[in-house]
Image (cartoon, rainbow, N blue to C red; front, side, top):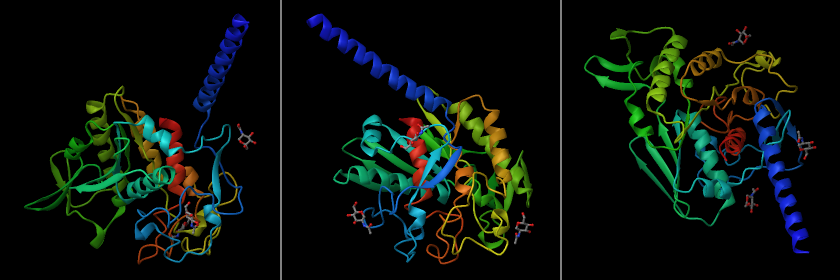
Length: 349
Ligand SMILES: *[C@@H]1O[C@H](CO)[C@@H](O)[C@H](O)[C@H]1NC(C)=O
Ligand SMILES: *[C@@H]1O[C@H](CO)[C@@H](O)[C@H](O)[C@H]1NC(C)=O
Ligand SMILES: *[C@@H]1O[C@H](CO)[C@@H](O)[C@H](O)[C@H]1NC(C)=O
């Protein structure tokens, strides 16, 4: 009798073990970034909304700003050859006890950071937290779990400094890296600021190899800065202690020709994703540059390859329900960055 029970228990354990191993194998061989957006629900299926999460900044808070269509809140991302695990905020907090996650980059990093905070709060609405800022770093601490979800605003990753000659963007210098030491999971991003010109360009000179330049090819400057960043990661990251991700290139939708709607001059009025599996306009060239740099690194960095899946979401931007100017670059919250975080969750937990 007892032997039989032990045998049944043993085989049950080995079955569970084999199953979880099979799931892990399946996840490993599955490309989470190849798939399609499916609208499987007749109502919004997001984990939070603008009344349940008080941390959505005005510029991303589309519903509060008057966006009334809600089809864009009903899509789930379905990879082709596996299913994503549901995002479990409490599980994430438990697994990350005593640890920290930091997003480093521009406002697209802020977009993803706010999304993650809202997703976690939706899972543990009663938990206590603190929200503090120091210099460029904002820290959201889930104190009951000793987990920090941080944002370091560093739009170029490399240094931007005021000197006697003017404001200098230093492509070889990355002093900001001091703030990234000791963080357990880092998610980097930079791209959108590299094309800024005129009044919105925050530098007067670019410094490279000890020379000052009035300007240079922006994609080349981006590549040089990425090399500096890659060197920092290769020199400073211990892969057994820290996981490093690159958010990828978050795409904008200002030109309908790219999605076979030449009349559309922006994302205004877009209520549905692009149909099909591939974006007619292709990926932005910056993605190729990023992949090349990541491919030459010594330390492992995972590309959180959000470009392709986000390209399909011409409907996901604030358009006229965000910034005072039209915005087809950032994303409504709740919205597309929630999926980036669901994928991130599948990769880290
Ligand atoms: C937002 O979420 C809260 C909590 O889940 C729910 O009670 C409320 O009805 C939702 N509001 C809207 C506008 O969907
Ligand atoms: C994913 O889930 C759906 C619906 O639950 C199911 O029909 C499908 O077979 C699953 N796909 C895979 C690859 O497991
Ligand atoms: C839109 O994209 C098409 C195709 O890439 C290009 O020919 C056109 O010049 C673009 N329009 C604008 C306004 O940038």
